[in-house]
Image (cartoon, rainbow, N blue to C red; front, side, top):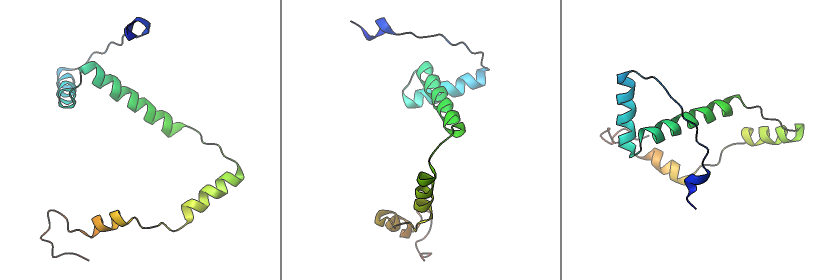
Length: 98
């Protein structure tokens, strides 16, 4: 049985200026996506971001104390990151290493 047989899609209509539509189409083409897929993905991502920003996190006093202890502890260096940060910037002549 095709997957589309059970789909419960709902149409969404928008009025967009030509410039916005051209921008969306250009970006969708660069991603190899249809306009619909591109706009749906962007809208869902934006909605998830808003919900994550406004979501309430609840934890016990013990959990909060453990969370704060982890945040307050000194960070362990990550050797790969240290090596990357020691490299000269690609736009520099390489003489400005610290």
